[in-house]
Amino acid sequence: MGSQIPQRAAQGEKKGGCALIPFQLILTHTQLTNEGTLGKETNIMGLDALRDRLDIIDERILSLLSERAKVIMQVADFKRHHNIPIYVPEREVSIIERLRMANPGPLPGDSIERIYVNILEEMRKFESEHSSHEEEERLF
Image 1 (spheres, helix red, strand yellow):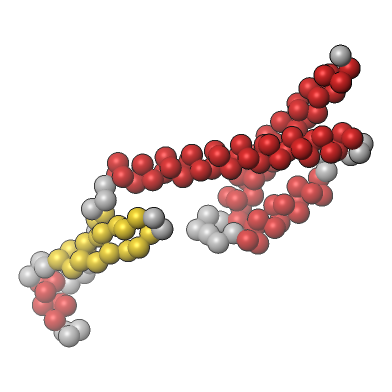
Image 2 (cartoon, rainbow, N blue to C red):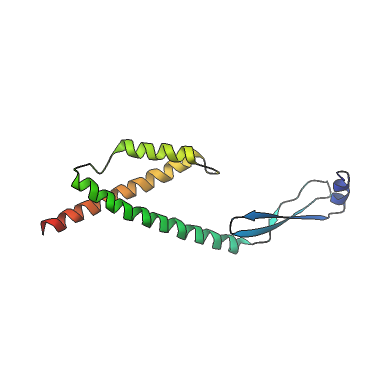
């Protein structure tokens, strides 16, 4: 059977397959060239469908960031009532280390770290703003 593949390749025959991606089935086909090598794999799904998937993922990320911000508001209240500083560098280091260890890929750990440094910085700013806003409301 293995010897039939080069003969099929010489005839320019196509080989089909599919891959199961969470929530979606993606069909692919690969064309064998006359030299018996695999040609470029094409995706029948199309660029628009892939972009639609990215839009859905982006909306999920946005929802999770909003959920995180709501918890940050509770953390800010707790810290204010217990005189705990907003910025605790050890906590941020431990978050990044934990996420680097939990990273399933394909993004490298350095990329995860850069993304989360930005997320944590923005959340810290938000926490600070929430804390100062709550303090102003208590004074009036």
